Figure 1 (cartoon, rainbow, N blue to C red):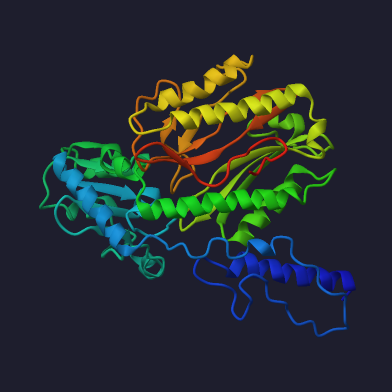
Figure 2 (cartoon, rainbow, N blue to C red):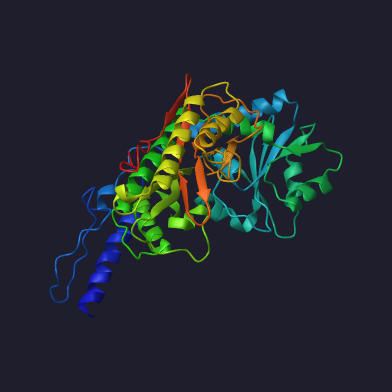
Length: 439
């Protein structure tokens, strides 16, 4: 084995420890809480190992508890109360985010339906393929629901409705339920009233609990630290996908999971989601990174745009655009408070963009100002023109104005904001200037 090969395996083992062993509750066994374990090399001596670049982020997510069983139980009761108020018999959910939010298992969708049935009165049950019972038990979520198994020749839709023989009235299904499941339920009970579950679950999911806010706050603070750490590793000639690997390594070292990274260099950032071929980094480019991950199932979503190289070399046009985006973000933040319509927040940012001489419509600020965030990166409420929803304490959302000029540059600054009783809280430091893009 060559010395270079031994060096590669040593670094790989350390990365695997940081990315694979560390969680919010545990660290790699018999390791310092900050430094990764050093594997024993039994071959000829080699040079001293190089320190992992993101070891200082290890443990950044520790100390934040997952959602407690009591909160999942309270969510079930909230759903029952809303069913009762709306005179509905039950809600039926497919595997997905709503089921997870209610304490169900993390489960992929297939042609075999996994359904959670919650009646207005009576016991909630999982309608599940019988041969998956053992796996479901091992993957139980916040609550261990009783299982009603169905064998391969049986109809899960009929079994779901059979559990509701004592319940009369309309039934709601999850808003993301697939068509064949809806048709299967209707085929069994064509006389039932059917509708989507938006009015049953969405109001509660929009208003984050104190426990959810703690998780979201830490996830987004840590994401900002990871971006700042990865920025120090940028080098001329690096391709976008190489820098994505750096940011992902930093996020995972910090303890985030299911990470994603969108890095855009120079003029490529004029397309908010980039181009398939990507671009290599050049001195004087603006670097845009949109990224996030998950902590206990809750998402982060942060964007920063900064100068690669000496910020003083950024020309006046790009500097004006960066400062305009920063001012637009501040104007939107100042507008966020309980009772304000989502459309008003979007309008506040666009007014700043227009006053600075850019297009305040969709020609240069091409997307809505923001989206809600929680267990999903994008969820209600949405900060967009004509959105009538009025903000409530506990709403969490992105505040991400941008300017995109094809052939020139793209700039976006994104922070996650929580609506408080009297205004808004930003999770982590804001970008201050091109010279202080990470606060």
